[in-house]
Length: 448
Image (cartoon, rainbow, N blue to C red; front, side, top):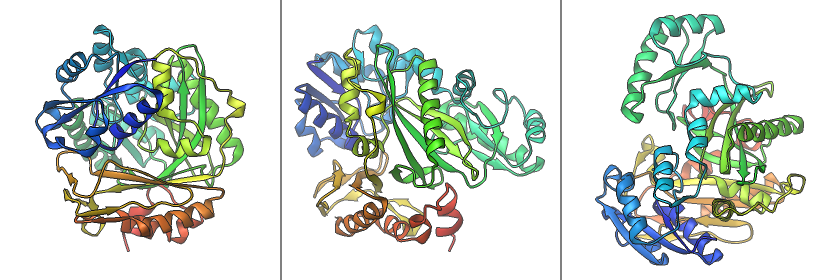
């Protein structure tokens, strides 16, 4: 086991890794930007090192500064968390060249699954269903139109290096497609430095279901069943739950087996997520792999009893996972609400600022993962997530009731948060009846 680990991240996930390391008896070195100087969670690390000014491009994304901090902190490994450098294969390669362990997959595996177009090719190699679409990157508007006519409109344009809905456009005809291709390519170039766009059939009103995987360096890969992430706004997840309320058991098993098959084909180890969309006939199609820990990982932890962050660390240290697939049985129902510093009444405008008072909910089956405290100032420079509220109960009905109660208990004063929209969704009949698809929130709830 490692003796000392650097956490190349901030906020909620940095605190989550610190806690896991403390329980494993591993010392931690936290990094921080000037905007995060004095953040309370930094006091829980054994050492904290400043890596630059507020702008993430000058601090958390500076590989040279992160590696320098690792050398100063005398660590054996780096945990990248999620976001920032977590899926940067070059960073993982630099860690390896500096003889610093990277708590995640190898650079080679990350490259195989990180580019969406190559990941689709890998999925086909592994016999995993993919959405009908282009064989590779679309080189021109004319090619986009040709492929779209072959598979039929509507179609979806996606950035091969994308994420979070950036570089994505839906087109219903030739004229719309020409404009969408230009917009998606330009947005992809600006967001990811890669203008590559591929095209696939647009599945109308799909559900977004993902499989949590976990592998070790001894060739073992396990799945921890699924999470339903269909409750979204503009491709940004709002609520996640496990198990999926509408997924037939046969489909659930086939999807989980497909995810493991893909991971083994990629020689993937560590934690990861294989994401699928599910159509209205319960057919599932691969869309991408997230080669890191996910924001919503607590949902899988609560239904399986497996600590994913500890498992990541043990796997990176070379340990064999002490698991058996047939014994990983989901128990009960878990729901997670992402609490962001945003104002739902003002088109989800970010609301950074000082938290005058925060009171966290509690009680049976309630978990609150947050770095925010009373007096903490939410900086305007980063993702607006301030905490994750997760509940776990024997049934979905009980989990929904507990989540509503916990959201009403949560007090965050001084800034606006997404609590009101979560309450509105959880009390909506469509959510209760598991009729939510990825378009529902914008198409119905926010349209009224």
